[in-house]
Image (cartoon, rainbow, N blue to C red; front, side):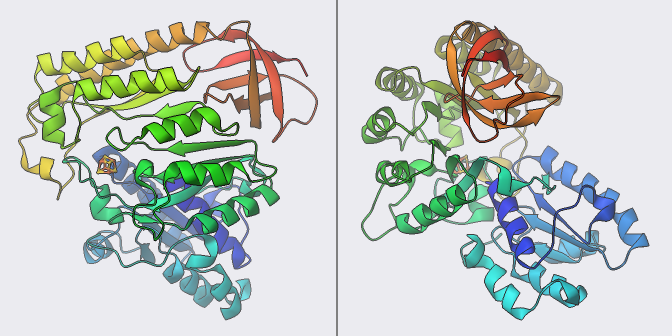
Length: 435
Ligand code: SF4
């Protein structure tokens, strides 16, 4: 979601006539789009801002902006702590930045440009936030990237006990299907071949709209956009994934066989304390239904270790579930309390070294499982959508989101390549193009 927001801020700035540059020393405007989902993300943002302080001292005309989830009702605290930052932007807000840029850099645009660059025109909604994910924007040549991100529902109504998102991004607000389809068409016209439909809880898309369309209906519409090769969606919630959605993914040719289904814990007591709304058996049954319903699907998950009160035995329940379900990827994080959430009132009683041990145990297990799963790709032909080049090799992803590299002299960017997999490891594969 932060990546999508960053692209939209970049588009708004480019609408004023600014262009991306190679490094921060050459920039007139630097935006850090922050994440507050974990303490470590906030620390990284603060350290990057610290590095900008020196540049700002030498160049007072430089515009420095802090955007995203770290900005909320606490703006005056942030102003005190970070006096060299010129503007603070809550998630989905960009207008204050554009006004400041026009004030400071009169050559870059005019009021008409502001009108056409501001929020709604670049795909941000205009919304009043309630109370209140770190990425420094860097030039990405996004107009050339065949892979783009499209938010379809903002905010989250779930209030999982550890999560700051509903406080920072507000309640769920879906974008109308037609607006999304139009955006996808525009992206395809500018070179996109794959879109990922985004939401903190993407499966609850549409419940707040007049005709109550659901994610399945939206996938049907996006699947019909000419010129688009692939559609993905992120992130699903186990309590909201319907049979209809599973059937739709299996049926629509452009929708990829890839589902990220965060489990967060393999222990019922911890799931209750997390307020996740499902039990381990329900999760297991759903994962099996997805695997039966969508042939060759890649299933990935998210897991938190060291939640308040998590005993060794409860952690082992999570570990055993990972062994049993053999996900392709597990995004694992050590719990860190987020002020204002329900879990922050619980004693954070798993010692840091034990959290680290559990984290490393999961990482080691997952590396082994991912390497074993990857072996099934050896000597098969996979369809790769080529996203760019790295160290002289083309790089892209399979429909199941596996990273593949191959060497070839022809121009492959944005095209589908058939690649025979010669080497497959836990994190990526190497192959030979055959078309
Ligand atoms: S579903 Fe839970 S973890 Fe995900 S964004 Fe909403 S509150 Fe946070």
